[in-house]
Image 1 (cartoon, rainbow, N blue to C red):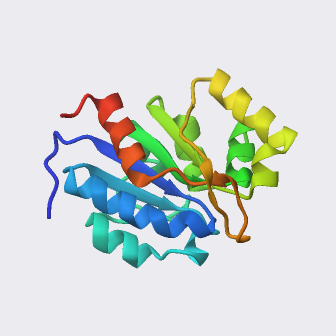
Image 2 (image 1 turned 120 degrees about the horizontal axis):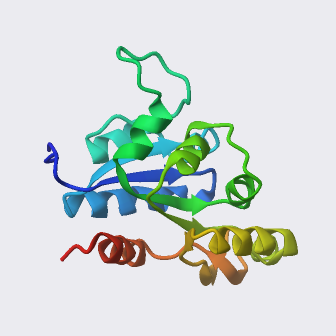
Length: 185
């Protein structure tokens, strides 16, 4: 399935959380809405989902490395961020949220976020104690003050088997927020 050039492009950043498997369903839902999605998998995310599974759903190249050989000079992070209408980090780990909050730019996804002028949505997923930790809460507050959007987390079953705040928000809610930002019908 090819995407029309005038369809909005989305960056879907997947970070290293067990909730990463849910990103595949979000990706499927976005593609069904005729959104062209460029997936960026962090090194840690690849422990949970594969580039091949993301490519099979998106029908687009999946990106994993900041530095890759290119035919025409156009830095990858600049090229991807300049085409993106919305950036989504689903799931957003405590590590990745903290990385962005302190300005650490050491992989493709963080470089794309820092070079983008588009809306960026973080969808946190982590154990309750991690999410409620004062450092993580300060980092979230800092990013919100800078204009980054946060969806979730919600209360639900966590990987520990306990119930608590930290469960990733449902894919449909993310899709609705993308539609709102892009003014899609």
